[in-house]
View: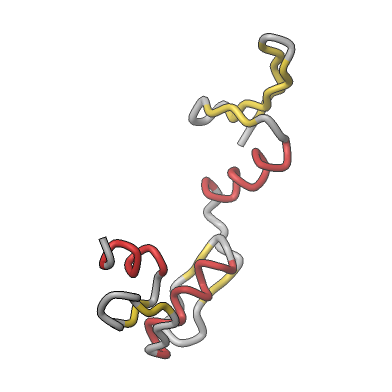
Length: 90
């Protein structure tokens, strides 16, 4: 993957040529480039599924453990993801 630095209105932007996205910080560009990589650094020891980010593996492991750390304040139902819990209480 290639990237370039461009200046626009006195701002330094880092551009990913593959999908024409701009990033204000090179570190964010480098993190985003991981998504386009075929290499997945983290893999589930139970099923072998691969992930680009450790956090995604941690969330995935809840499928195997049954862990549901988020509880709805309205109905006390448990969820693996906070976003699903928030949607339930609306």
